[in-house]
Image 1 (spheres, rainbow over the protein chains, first blue to last red):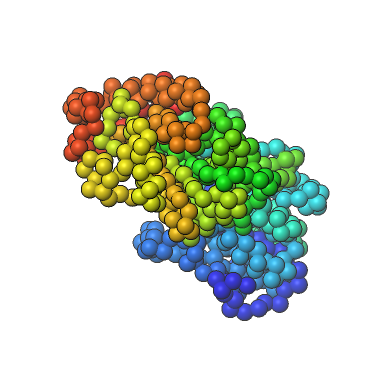
Image 2: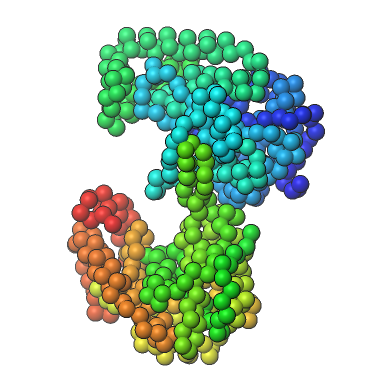
Length: 275
Length: 299
């Protein structure tokens, strides 16, 4: 094992699954889902990857007066036989970094790996959330088809864009014969700066079933109820917001300016109301 | 990590020609034009995943099928008097996020390329790049030359339109070749190989614009084909250069009159000491995007 991988303990795990959330993600879905798993399942950090080869360390980033430092930390939840990884996506030496992640996974005898990520959706928040899973092998696709998260989708990264770090990890895992799937939930664009508990619940429902986690998700139901109430109140109080959301509900797109206004108004309103 | 060769042809002391992207993609276009026009055949590649972030993911029937990376390919061509090897890299491995390679990965890649060169008996390596110059886009770009030995430099500078870097006005014999097009000849020197870098002139006011400058590549191809004693059809490159000339002229006409007036002084000969001012550079930089937003000038 590379000296860049630091174990603080060796948790007792059988054949765990690994759930990965990146710190940079649409709607922070990966971070929120992995935070939830760590909190609810009593995850304890047991391993980290040193940042020195993978991140620019010429200083430190500050965000809203808080120091940001790249972190790659594994948490163990032995009772649920689960490993959770929270990490800043590396800035360079990606393949080497991803192989270190998989070295840790194989050290822990991980049987399958899931990444969690948000996608930007142009629809309204009232549209039911969908979970899309992209497995890295036909065998895993067959297994996951019972959860109705796979599609017979054909896709290529459009010119000018690059694949996500989750796809890169899944491909690297495929080269090492580790079953992996990227889980994606489209998140309404105006909820990206705040939070989307519906999207979180969608992922957690799947993980609950697939990994037998026995999580009680009623707190997320309550968060969804509260957010829905606030958004309803906002629509009643601000007719222009209501008009914009109604148009989205009827699959009528907004102009860029209208999009930006909606994002700003929703963020201001929900933050004011403590969301 | 390494080079994967699909073939093992027997080659007669091939010279190696290497091109990576850079300013105006002058080096890349130069070497790729020679490769295409001479009909060089695919020989192998450098496994890319250690060096690059992927460019494309392919999902087939809902399953992650494959990843595409920037291509880094070797080619070869047998000629009557001397064989050639080519290495064409679509991207420079970015060590620390910048556009040019540096550090360990750049050094590793340079050595991988030279390992293949030496495996086939190559003793000489050519790279190419951009020479940012106080020139005008209406002038024929000269080719600046540097080499690993005096004897080699003497050989190169005998070619028409070629000037050793030390004789370029106002440089005082000093200079630097950024990225792998420069590093490779440094590593070649370390390994006792002959190395030559030929740089096509690009006007300083075009050095930051996001489009190729094939006119300079044309100058370098002319020099290289002279050195290598090969005949190359330049018509495709000339067409590309003409198209770009129109784009550049359109952009140039929109420069403020005072900037244009200063640049016009260069039309006769490149003038030492007439670099664009900081203000000129700022103006061009701030307006570059506008030139490309308008559809008729898009590239």
